[in-house]
Image (tube, rainbow, N blue to C red):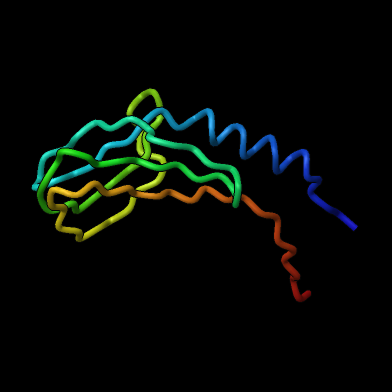
Length: 102
């Protein structure tokens, strides 16, 4: 039997955590560079981006690496007003067995 060990899953999760440098959020057609507001590992790896003062139609949010390459893209349609808003990016890694019929 072949099994991915928990250590490998932990290492891949740590790699993903280290790779994310920030986010780009499109509001009313303008791209805003945003910092990661919070990172959680309580229920798998999650990155959070907080919008505070920005207002307008949020249409896209993307996690990026240090080179600005998009790693995770969310298409949205959220009208942000004066209240704060947090965008969550779940980055959970899990191993699943795949059976192949031969």
